[in-house]
Image (cartoon, rainbow, N blue to C red; front, side, top):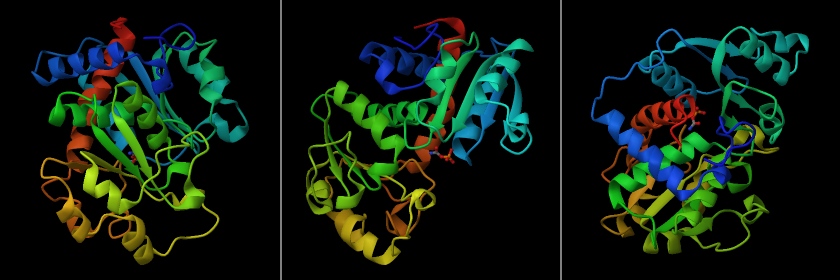
Amino acid sequence: MNLIGSRKHLLSMKHLSNEDIHQLFSITREIEKGHPEAPFNGRFAANLFLEPSTRTKSSFHIAEKRLGLEVLHLDGNDSSITKGESLYDTLKTLESIGVELAVVRQSEVGLLNTCAEDLDLSLINGGDGCGEHPTQSLLDLYTIDEQFHSFRGLRVAIAGDLKHSRVARSNAYALTQLGAEVSFVTKPEWQDPSLTTNYITMDEAVDRCDVLMLLRIQHERHDQTTAPTSYLEQYGLTKEREARMKDHAIILHPAPVNRGVEIDHELVESRKSRIFRQMKNGVTVRMAVIRALLKGEL
Ligand code: CP
């Protein structure tokens, strides 16, 4: 794993080779087979969530506990960050008192990279604003791999609020590196400067893709709200569009889902949807990442 700093951190999908990704899948499958797993009994992790989260925070908690770790939880309201302490000083403090792994969600793109250089604890990016979300990407990739067993030539369409989506960015890097044909669907004003090519319409996407990856509209990062009905009809997955998808095609969404906006309410739990499978896989994939970082398995 080509990681920033002491090769202990997971901050960006740009730092993982294809071999690293497949090695993490292999560890995930080993964990799924039910090998006894509590290798880190008596050791400490901290989850520092300065932006809201349900899935990432909860699945890291379960992953850490299943690996035997004791878990500290800090947020923006109950830590000394409210008194002005920096993120670096917070992490250095946790390291000083015995924490070996920290999962951090916060809003400033690139901030974790600067912190990681001088930290001995392992740092995992749990989502940095509009930057990246590497463990979400890994669980998405694992869910795709369960279905197709290869990425080469796979047609993946990433659709939605690209400009504000850390999930889109992490997945676009990784899927392209793995050999998938990645295209994008969005409103003109939500195109991302780092994702410059392969823009198609939603109708083209449903006709050709093997994987349709929908993104949440991130209203909290917008100046104005988008009318839900017109978005679903123009850019979202309606029942009519879903019926045109290839029989083997699957639907992903990192969630939380705006039901009836990015996707018709009834399709969220439909045959092609892997949305709740993604969440299930998130626990074991995160166990694999933690194990790989703490045991130096990559
Ligand atoms: N997909 C995801 O990151 O969800 P949360 O914001 O609930 O963690």
